[in-house]
Image (cartoon, rainbow, N blue to C red; front, side):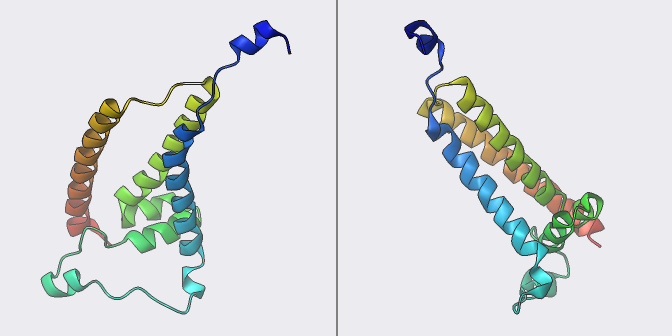
Amino acid sequence: MSEASRDRTPLRHPEILIAPGITFLAVIGILAIARFYGDLPVRAPECAFRERFAIPCAGCGGTRSMQALSRGNIGAALRFHPAAVIGVFASLLWMLRGIRRYCSGESPTPPEKVNRHFLRGVAFAVAMIFLNWIYLIFFLP
């Protein structure tokens, strides 16, 4: 490799892949557990919130959604818990974006910008969870 071509090679920053990679691996792990959930010797307890208030909590339907998604049934997964499905696909997109940033040699985001993105992300997540909860109250099968 010549000196000139070495100068054009982007400097890669593997730390760009840490957060999306861990998140993506966790999601894959959750889907793997959901795929074999019926064969496991333990079950999740009944939802105490639903028993007490007669409406689903914000997480109700999540297990059934992940089971359906792990079997490729996206429609059923969306009916059981739309936010969970959106979260799975968001983790995939985040991982693909991280790979693209890594391959292009993009520099890590400065901390002050990361903090702004984090706060926007939290606000978006809270809004999504609230809207998803409203959906679950009225439409959870």
